[in-house]
Image (cartoon, rainbow, N blue to C red):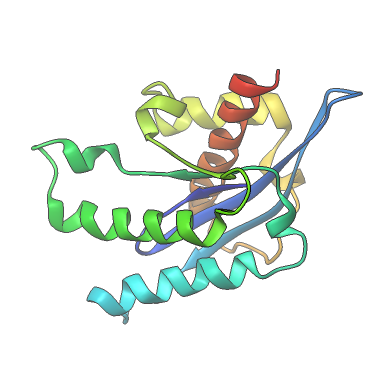
Length: 169
């Protein structure tokens, strides 16, 4: 499962792989949204709670791996810590929610520049849809009304594919 955390719109998706047939497909897609009227720490709490509720859905905690994007810009002086700190908090909370600390850790934090190798959103989208099909064919738990929000889910799938390719293919 991949999570593209954000204060307002977080994309989540599960990438499935059949090692015998080498078939790859996408399930459990969703865009978790924080209402615009919720601000500050309440927005952070809200998104963390949305991720927690998503993790409680059937089959989600059965995923072998959980990949969470961690904002690399947090360490870049060109970016505002006021923007990056909430994202870091949400990513850290997701990591804690998804990790199995008693066995092998299944959650992993990745920097955006590592998994997407500095590709822009359009190029990333092209690559991911070539690998696993069109977004319209993916299984979404709830309909997404604004197609612009698909970019968050595409990123979540991209992170999953990065780890699948790195570790298993």
